[in-house]
Amino acid sequence: MAQILAPSTQWQMRIAKSSTNACPMTAKMWNSLLFRQNKKGGTPKSAKFRVLAVKSENSTVNRLENLLNLDITPYTDSIIAEYIWIGGSGIDLRSKSRTISKPVEHPSELPKWNYDGSSTGQAPGEDSEVILYPQAIFRDPFRGGKNILVICDAYTPQGEPIPTNKRHRAAEIFSDPKVIAEVPWYGIEQEYTLLQTDVKWPLGWPVGGYPGPQGPYYCGAGADKSFGRDISDAHYKACLYAGINISGTNGEVMPGQWEYQVGPSVGIEAGDHIWASRYILERITEQAGVVLSLDPKPIEGDWNGAGCHTNYSTKSMREDGGFEIIKKAILNLSLCHKDHISAYGEGNERRLTGKHETASIESFSWGVANRGCSVRVGRETEKQGKGYLEDRRPASNMDPYVVTSLLAETTLLWQPTLEAEALAAQKLALKV
Image (spheres, rainbow, N blue to C red):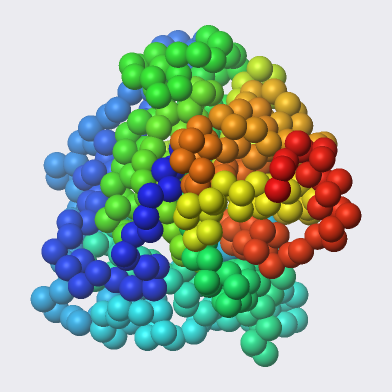
């Protein structure tokens, strides 16, 4: 779990001036991520993966690697900006590159750009132009130097946000004076599953079969317990290089599943950092020849699903007497349970069954140190009388702009009727 301590001093809208001294993730580093299946005779009963060193001397790979690692700074002031946006499904990520004449420190220095929305499911063919607005910049761990990744949101040529642009509405909520005054912090736990490319079966699992039952894999070490650690570690370092506020990572309960934590982040920054971290993970798994899945229940049966637990606190919650504010927030969340569930990710009904450390999707519950509840409060928060809550309902494929802004809206801007509040408090045994 991400610990809610204090937000980083680096905001998503700026690039540290010391970034030119940082070392990019070179192509040689990615070579260690290439996993290949051992094949001895016909179809193997189990998929065993080993790390291969790519023979690059006097080879095409070596020549390509040299070009990828070319240092262009002595020859031009230009940089490469990778514009990143969310595609038509609301979960897929798209990107394209353009040359910028000089290094930049703020997204306002970057031009808007257009793309063909008919090819991403976001516009009709007869009126296909969609406009990208740069919103946040990060150092590019793939190209290094002063090159950047640019998180964008999408608008019509008339300046209206397109339906898949959830950032626009989130920014409006986080700009509300009541929300600004409460300085909302988020710590997001992003779970994901690594799949073998051709068979779309979890990494390290026998093809068409199953590993031993859950138990030894969570935070485990060893070739028979940990599958994909190089990918997790490469992603961790690449995020730190980029300036993403990543705070930790660990192997998860289901083999082939991992988690990383981003935060504490303030307001809209939480969504920008999660989307940037997802993009970097997609690129790393692409180079490793492994498929990234954010499906909330990739394997049916007695296996844990994949969530995106969201830790949340406000200024009032973090101050003395904050536990009472937390309980009031939980009460509001209980009254809006269905609205939140509908916005917390597709396929979540397959995950929120009341089993495998989840609450039932049908009802709202809360508890102290109870991972089978909709919302969990930590022992330390109860003891100190202040702290944060953990919303355990969001699925791994949730949109962080939607989840973070909805938490702020429900707990800070929405007010239930006194009658509804009293009934909910009685049902939840909350003395508010």
